[in-house]
Image (cartoon, rainbow, N blue to C red; front, side, top):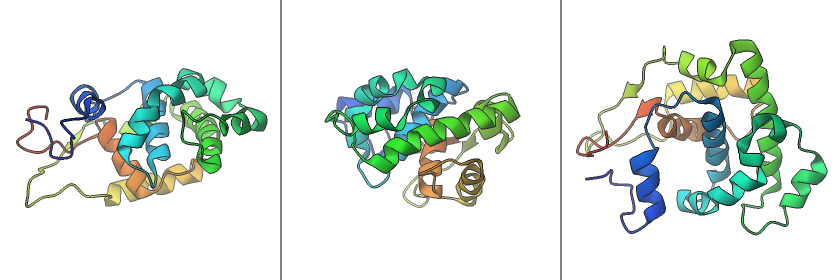
Length: 182
């Protein structure tokens, strides 16, 4: 049994849920990719992002944060012609800004992992999710992290985006109580 949000008929959803979502992640490269994916999702369906995930990975140098941080305006503008990705100029430029902010955080905390997991004392939050306790879209924690990340120069990191990121990276476990993958 899977969480109620999983579209069982969609293999992208099933794979993402079963192999990735909610599993604690401590790899900076993967954390950067997950953060980018969540920023692309803003205002769109998660299915759209999952369908374009592979193309985004190619467009952004396999999410090599150093290479993304060095992308020029012309590099980013060229991506606007790529039909395989979400062609939203502000989101594409935010990817570079977020890479630069990510590196600044790493310089200060030795890793993004240390920074982000420090907000929860390096222990995942496990929530009770059922009919009486639905998944929130944001929390005081995601609001606090969002505010701090904006100070570092991150873009498209509102509290809803950050809450989704925390779920994706396993800092928060919001699997339904009856889910076999919790």
